[in-house]
Image (cartoon, rainbow, N blue to C red; front, top):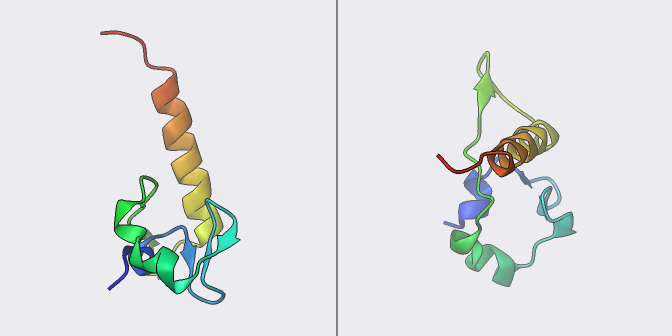
Length: 71
């Protein structure tokens, strides 16, 4: 099973990745195990967050990691 299907950034309605803003082909889905932006689907009150909400959370997470300096 392609990893994209289990990703919060993937819209199953139109096979589109919200991070890359492109429609994924079958070849792209087959290579999805290598995606560095994979995000587990998060749920709030039993309802999965939308791909846009996952996108905002992932973007915020990556930006917070950029600001970390040496320890």
